[in-house]
Image (cartoon, rainbow, N blue to C red; front, top):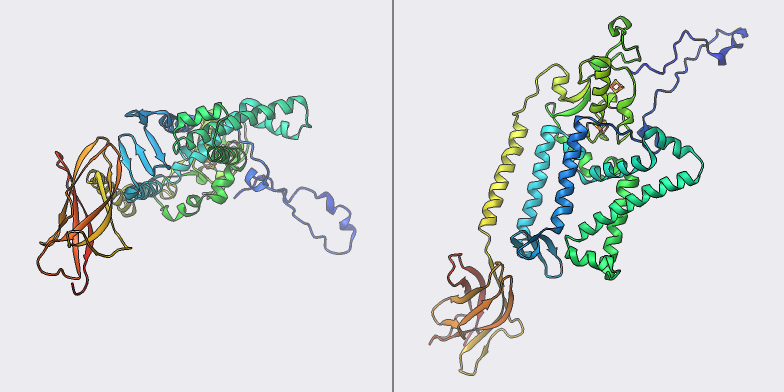
Length: 488
Ligand code: SF4
Ligand code: SF4
């Protein structure tokens, strides 16, 4: 029970003085002074205090890796081409040596589904650990907070600056902060857009002010989105917009690792001298310094219990551990634990839900790898000529015409052979063999003729078979129909 801030009922209440002159029984109103309000509840800007500790180092490591991946990969080249590029113009997705075509969309969807299951799995194990350490919203917010700190100072200096009237000093500090925010936002936007349009050309166009309208729009859009999200919205994105934050609680169970305050050990909270004996004072280990609240980027008080606003960044653990060290108490008043462990039980690591998600994840990854390895590196699409169901050619044969689209998805050129798999009497009007360059697409018209002596059936299924010469890959097959007059 949070007692601090409640006025003692034995203190005289100045508002009641004089009231006892009445002949009524004096009613004494116990009007509690408001409990210390969290920044989140106060609704104003949250001035997070920066704090170092082992979990901050872990966050820095997570952010560093993410940055390296995000900013570095965009500039990497692979086989004389940008290593990761979603080429919207030619509708191809290059990822290192592999190229995915629109026909491979199912594989890309599978990657998203696997990523979602990976997130479910991690959530069951360790709650919102993704949010605190690697979510781009959190990582960019930490970067923006760092910019805030080096330009406007730490928490108390920023609070003072907020309250101060406008001056040259305030203007310069605010200006420097926004300049850094905008620079980070622009570089982020450039990198992000650079995954969809070659980044080297994009950067050159930006520097030479030669951006096209579309590129300029998207650069502006993502710069503004980064600036607003990480600079202004911050915890509101996690609290009010992020769907994951809302539904993650259904994945939690009593064994899930969460960041929690050990109320059993911490209460009764209250200030005391370092050399005092808490037991003699009737106090627990929490000295009510409020440091865990000041370092919280979402402005909540972890001592109020598990809250959906908590992004599990562990800043409050670092803060509280430092206080425990200073007081000479054991660390871990705020710590990673499970609900079960907090209640004196043992955290169960292997449990049905976790095994279920883990099993599904392994199965899906296995199926994905198999599908990836089995992915045909050529594609064949056949469309019947709908304007002319059949006709008689100059040799007097019944003929159907088709349009073929052949795609060589490989990184090297190849010689392709097209054959027909159909009933006797049906054959290609002319043999088809094609030379296609790497990632080449070819459209070609094609005719199939009936050479049988008897009139053909009105409708027959036929298969076009495409194979690569000197390659063991399985041929690809496209089905179609051969139509004839009902009575020919
Ligand atoms: S309560 Fe602790 S772990 Fe949760 S967001 Fe705040 S500082 Fe991070
Ligand atoms: S940092 Fe620790 S000791 Fe200080 S108020 Fe928070 S829980 Fe209590």
